[in-house]
Image (tube, rainbow, N blue to C red):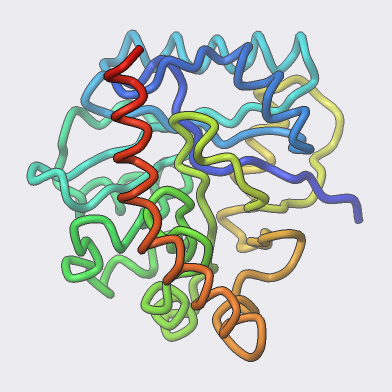
Length: 254
């Protein structure tokens, strides 16, 4: 069965911390080998009207370009610690809602909810296993916060609870461009609304694979590959502040 290679957790200019308009995102992500994207813009810049516009633009551009766009919203709890991307045509649940409510309502409304970036601000400490029956997955590798290897806690938690481990570019710019993909069965022909709905149905049924460089993400946490990525991540963690310091210095001179 043919699979679609989707770019997961993508922020567009509908978010307050991204200036990437959807047409530009489509061009860049398509050149990078993706067949579509899971778009999720922040609830803090959202209202019912904006959510309707996002869905309309995803469908219009998806139909025009053939690049599949699945609309979604990234919800944050009132403390801005726990984040929950919700993909599908569920109604807008409001800004900074109670996550317990969103998890349950999303499942009832046929939308796919994912526990995002556990590493960020130690969100994993607030994870409630009671959410498991309603979740579609746990982000085990978020490019923005986990670097070049998956999150060990997330992989273990996903396995223990029988949830799929997912991945996320957490796209705000090209710094997050990386060969992480969520692979789902290619949906039947149809318009973007129909095909994106089929993708969400596949996610809810667990018919998806999270890969890095085309390899199952769990393999990056064990054996020779796991040891290698741990070494690379240690090097990246050491070098990242120095690179940012140089970038800031160069920006200050321009």
